[in-house]
Length: 194
Image (cartoon, rainbow, N blue to C red; front, side, top):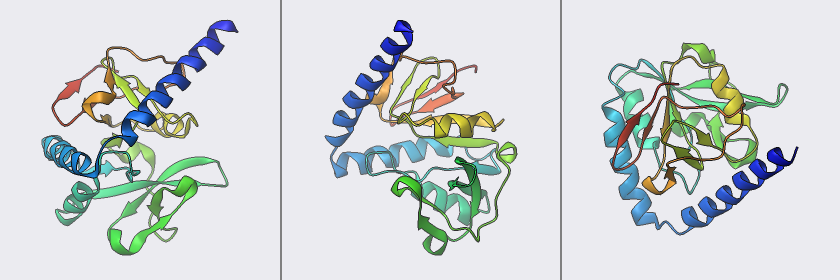
């Protein structure tokens, strides 16, 4: 029991440290870093025909322009949506981001209910935000476990997206924490075996 409490304490402390660091990122730095990440991701996208994007929060790297570009090229793109009845996230297809987006659970943008749901196992590339990642593909989320549960239903390649400062040699993890296959930062792409 003591080990579990210590692990939870370490995770909470790292989340607090990362929240403070991300709050200090200026809009100009975020925009430049987002452009670099999107450019780096483009090398992964040509082979992906179904991509689950994320709707970036104010402190996350912005992959929205890449989603719009991918839709324009004919790629099937989707975003997570919160299924209140099941208390889990699913995925819905996005074709017209300007008209199909609502503000969902936790203030996160998500597809409206009239967008088609896509089974999670259909995606071959999933872009995954997080508070921190490590060199072995481990991910630290916001602490609610929603993304961990979402990722368990996905068989495609999972790609963590983060600033260079969110990447650590090792982070505290638990058995239920989902891993990613590779991580893209503004300066690098790291691959792992999950």
